[in-house]
Amino acid sequence: MTWNARDVLLDALASIESTVLKREGPGRIETETLVVDNGSADGSAEAVRERFPWVELIALEENLGFAGGNNVGLRRAKGRHALLLNSDTIVLPDALESCVRYLDAHPGVGVVGPQLLNPDRSKQNCVHNFPSLLSEIVPKGLLETLFPKRFPSKRYAHPEPIEVEAVLGACLFVRGTVLEDVGLMPEDYFFFLEETDWCFQIRRAGWKIVQVPTAHVIHIFGASTKKKLPLPTRVEYHRSLYHFFRKNRGTAQWIAVQGVRIAKQALYVVVRAPAALLSARARERWRGDLRLLAWHFAGQPAAWGLSGQRAAAAAGEGKEVSA
Image (cartoon, rainbow, N blue to C red; front, side, top):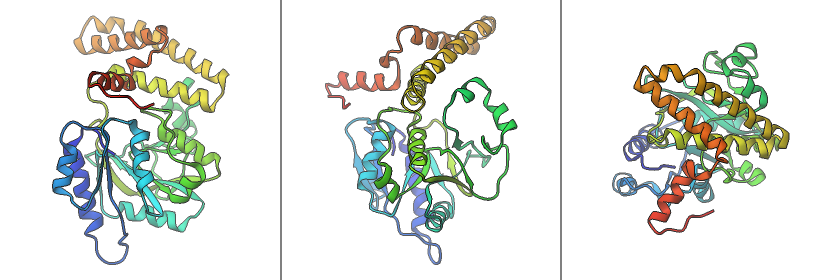
């Protein structure tokens, strides 16, 4: 799935072509490749048609969000397993094949993710724990230090596959029977935590989720999503976080997490104020903190987030926005 990321998309498809489609001999897998263009305006669809005729292109007229766009592809996929792959990725040799082999050999595993790498080949954090009050109150680094098995991170090497709570949606294999059992990715999020919620539902249905550390995929941060929209991005993350709590943790924790986040944000505004007087960069960061705090006290309007920007853009073009 892609959105306004033409150049990295072409690189991602070239990596699939060279490492997967052109592979010969033992270990080769049969694949179909679908590209869901989520309403891009940068010529992505035209470039894919021209350079990669073996791709099945699905060009959407509007941005359906991360889950909505991926679900369009999942409905069309025919394989026994499906791979969700961001456009800002580079597939390295044997990465996809090793994930397929693991799924085939472990019928109780519903989702598999590789080890994601930065462009310099250093490791990224690519597994998640489900949001909880504990993880909201206690710093993530401290939890990873005190409870490394429960809170795995890139800081600790594990040469063998490990069971985790959730893997990053930038590269996520899901077994076809899981789609039949649990359903598609939840579309009640526009962006952020969709795959986390999906993994929550998949684990609750009895499936295991595993990271395979020997499968490597490069993930280039920000090429497809951040787009110099810091406040809308931060707002959208908070909207998704609160929705996850309300949906999966209950009303009491949903109220509590908002209190925790508001208190943190107010503290940031106070503590970072002196630095804001000294540098433009610190001042911009402080203004972002202040605006995010204002968003909370304004009643958390959706229009301040990424989904609100989509609606505004569609309205400006005279388009109807899907629910």
